[in-house]
Image 1 (cartoon, rainbow, N blue to C red):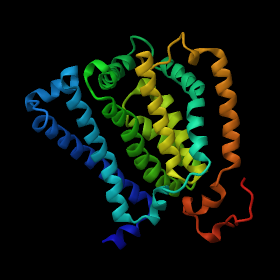
Image 2 (image 1 turned 90 degrees about the vertical axis):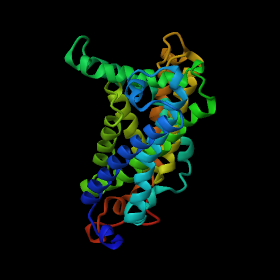
Image 3 (image 1 turned 60 degrees about the horizontal axis):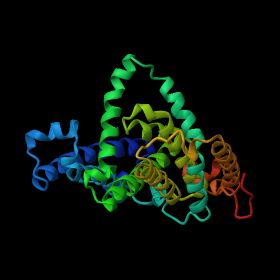
Image 4 (image 1 turned 90 degrees about the horizontal axis):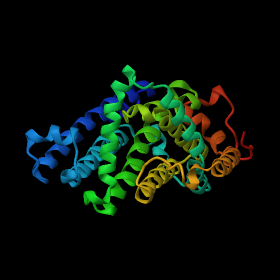
Length: 318
């Protein structure tokens, strides 16, 4: 059975992985609801109301239900896929030393804030006030924001360590395993184009969050995370950068009481934007100079030897 599965091309592998992930998300939802009722004593008939109108009484239940959904819905399908299809077909998830990118990737994601803020402004322009788009997307956005604030508010009584685990660590690991660990390599083999793979994965990464007021910023961040993997040859670079991004949002909320950059803070000053942009551009140039991509390209894209000349150990990066 495993030999048959491992002989499949990238396209059917991707279809099977998506089906497996959707199945696990459904299972995770059911398991989470079971935990909500059996462990935290929420009556089954009250669960829809608790999920649609979350309040501090159920903060502990909701945060652990969210964690279970993430772990079962995202980490489990990657584990099952890895066992079924073998490590080589997905480059062992790229879980190897990221070298300099352990430092470069987090710095890039931090200094990308001007680009992220500009894309957020553009995103708001795409959803006019009082439009059908606003009526469609705003309720979901408000519910997601309410849930996040519930997890982060000290008054909710959620222990700091649990909140940090739920906001910064679990999503960074689970989401990177799914999107940059499995989906992006398969899309690269399907398209034979790493840029297409990075951006399609970034689009899907943003889409699955179902928060359309932050769609463009999240897609740009997803693309950056994808390029971190391409340049470093390691999934750890994107996991660390994703963690730093989420941890920064966590700390910002704890300090400022908001997930948006306060207008009167240093992070909204033009000097910060200018300096951050200059550092971001410099780091982008440096990251590409240190990229291991020429050595990984043929294997990652699934191109046979006879279709090109592989870079040698003594070749200089393009």
